[in-house]
Length: 328
Image 1: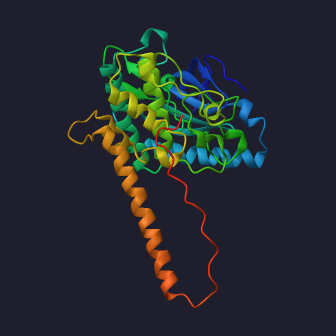
Image 2: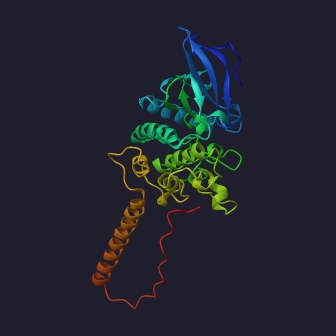
Image 3: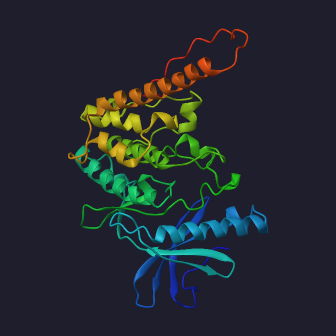
C-alpha cells in the first residue's frame, strides 16, 4: 500500500513529504527527519510483493536488508550514503541521504561534451570499485540513477538495484522492465552477476551521455533485432578511444568485457597514471586466451603420455576461432 504525505515512519523519526519515483521493483519517497533534514526512503513495491508468497516475501526482505547493511559500509563521495535499514510494519525500508541536483537522464543534460561525460563516468566508476570490493553489484547503473550535485561537478550514484537478482524470477529483468543499460546476463535468474555487469551499464551510460540516445537493449541485440550503432557515428566529435572503449564495455558476452571496473577505467584512459592504450587491451585479452589454450593443451599432452594404452581417439573437430571482441 502506497504511503501518503505526512505519514510518520520509524517511530515518528521520519515524515514523508512525497513520492519521488515508482518502478517495478521499488518505490522511493522524499522525507525529512526531526531536524527537518531531507532524506530518501526506499521500499519494495506493492506490485512486486503482491505476486509473492509469504515465504518468498520473507526471503526477499531478508536479503534486501542484508545487502542494505553491506552497502551502508560503502562510504564514498560519489555514492549515496545509506543511513539505516528498518521495518515499518511488515514493509522493509531503507533510509538514505538526499542528493540535491539533476539526474543525467534530464533532457537538458544531453548530450554532454566528452570531457565532462568522462569526468562523471570516472567518478561513478571509482565509486563502483568500492561496491565491488565489498562483494556487491549495483545492478541498476543508468543516467536516471546518477545525480549531479547542484552547483558542483560532482556525480553521485543513487538508488541501488537491491531488489534485482534476488534469486526470484519476479525480481529478474525481463523485456517489460529492461532498458538499454542492462547487461544481457541480468535477464537470466540463474546468471552469475559481477563487476562486469556494472561495466556494461556504465559503458551504456557513457554511450547515452555522449550521444543523447539510449542504446538498444542487450536482449534485442542478442536476438539480432537491432544493432548497436557505434557512438562516433552519432557524435562525430567523439574520440576514437572513447568510441572503442564504450563498445568494449558493451560487449554482449561476459568474457568479452573487462572483468573489473578498474580494467575498464584503465583502457578508457581517464586516469593517466594507470591508463592503458585502448588498442592494446585486445592484445592482452588475446594473450590470456592463448595462455589458457596452451595450458589446456599441456594437460592434454601429459594425459596422452601417461594414460594407459587405449584405442585410437576419434578425429578432433576443427577448433573454432575466438569471437571478435566487438560484438554488436
